[in-house]
Amino acid sequence: MTFYVTQEINENAKQLVNNALYKFNLKHFPVDLRGNYEEMNIFLKDENDNVRGGILAEVCWNWLEIHTLMIDEDIRKLGFGTNLLLELEHMALAKQCDFIKVDTLSFQALEFYKKHGYQVFGTLDNVGRDFKHYYLKKDLTKKK
Image (cartoon, rainbow, N blue to C red; front, side, top):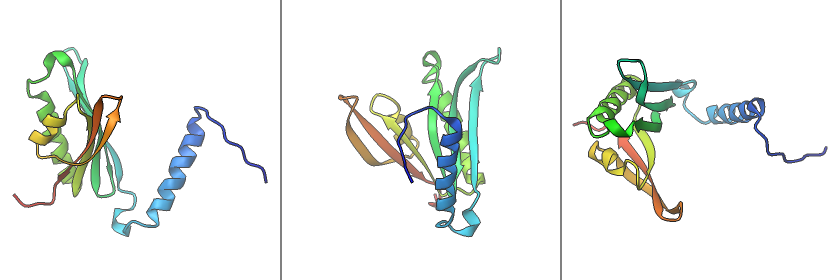
């Protein structure tokens, strides 16, 4: 049998790799968490139905992962990011997530997440040569 390596944009091959890893992972997670995957995207729109921001996230087993949180620069610091994040946290609780994880760069939203109770659990230095990459988590299971 002969093998070779190729670099290409191939959605079918990408899906095959993702599905194979997913099936492998299913063997190791508790039965009650199997199949617990759902995209959770929420958007901020203006009166003309233009998207001005949003959060792209997904529930995976017992956590929610934020991939992207963005608010247009001209409307930042007006509370829209907080409103979206709180809505997403409520959605995560409704889906019985134990925690939320997110990553951000030093010039992005570190202080925003910390203000909302997210704690840094890891960093990478020398990102883009001058920045840090932060990994944060918010535990949803603690009693307040």
